[in-house]
Image (cartoon, rainbow, N blue to C red; front, side, top):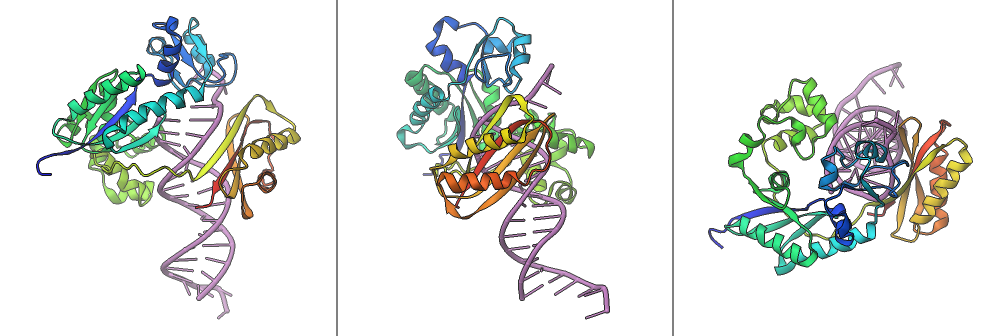
Amino acid sequence: MGGVTVWVLHVDLDQFVAAVELLRRPELEGRPVVVGGDGDPTKRGVVSTASYKAREFGVRSGMPLRTAAKRCPEAIFLPVDAEAYEAASEVVMATLAENGAIVQVMGWDEAFVGARTDDPEAEARDIQRRVFEATRLYCSVGVGENKLQAKLATDYGKPAGVFRITHGTWFELFGGQPTDALWGIGSKTSKKLSAMGIETVRQLASADLPTLAKAFGPSTGPWLVQLANGISDAEVSNEPWVARSRSKETTFQQDLTEWPEVQAAVETLARQLAGGRQVIQVVVKVRYKPFFTSTHGARLASPANEETPIVEAALKALEKFTDRRPVRLVGVQTVFEP
DNA sequence: TCTGGGGTCCTAGGACCC
DNA sequence: TCTGGGGTCCTAGGACCC
């Protein structure tokens, strides 16, 4: 055992969704490709992935398709084909798990891999080669002493590269960066920290714990300071994933103004969620015009997975909504028995 | 630039109990 | 009389991530 270090590798496919599309449409290679919604940029929807070429025009994931079309009128817009990406992803993950490696899948296009080695870069290069040979897809690999470092390292390796971050290099890389450079800190938390006079990762790293606990809660506050110090759970776990809930939601092309239409939409979604694991609670989500979201839930009398009790609970939850403004989205979530 | 769909975890506040 | 404090459960909302 002695002498061999435990590293965390973070593997992230480069422009994954766009890359899968390019593989089956080689004639689009080098052109700006935008995948999102049903492929119609005049409709409501956002960008899932933009190819590197499209990114040169300022197209980014999460951006409304309409905006993407304005920024890059010559882009090719393609609909999301979840099954194709799922299939490609399975090949990638199976490749990572060869040789009995511990793999923690984080989504379609990324995973953590545990590595006992003194040469993690060699391991990373080997992964890149095997993934490419199996799928013709490129990936970048971050190397770290824990998941946080590895995850943040990947971006520095893109595209198709390898990059290492350790406690030794943490502050020189991140000390001066804004707090939302960290994985787990978004725009809201960053803004709130700013208002407290904390702008950089270095400032957050030495922030007063009781003050942060008071502002963000007893668990979140100290966790933020840990993040800023480059500290996180090092464990890569390959425990099989057990979903806590499943949901379906729809954004309407035109807002619904009649409440019976809303009821019908909730019923349709609830039906689609029946037939799986035993459900104990149903939560309905309504997003009103202009963009205000509210949720209400209803528990089932006893765990069930049939259509009737799930639809009944969904409609019961919907009764708790009293606002009758135009509705742009409805969603239904089923919560499973623990 | 008018903002998808599918998830997870944490927190505050109220209800309820002893 | 109108006053405790702690623990737990549930709900809705918030934030973040892919």
